Length: 122
Image (cartoon, rainbow, N blue to C red):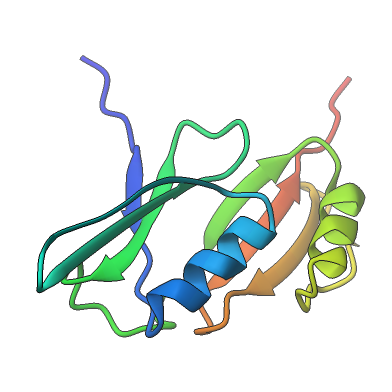
């Protein structure tokens, strides 16, 4: 039996601001529904990913900005960095850690992300 991670809640203070942020860096807005007055569910998926994030209201009790260590893998870290900067995101210059090239950024609430280009092994 496969156990797949397909959705991760990211706590935010302003759903529309967060949705604008994530779509500006290329995430697809898959769903935006309010099944009740207390719940708004927005699902966003990075290009090519089998796992999505959700933001909204009534989804998690985690504090906005409390998520650390979310990581995406890309084919080209420098290209990802340039795309983030072009979208107005404060990202770190690409750094080689030996186990991959990385750039880091945070969303408007301070949830922190790593973007990794895997090393090439012979």
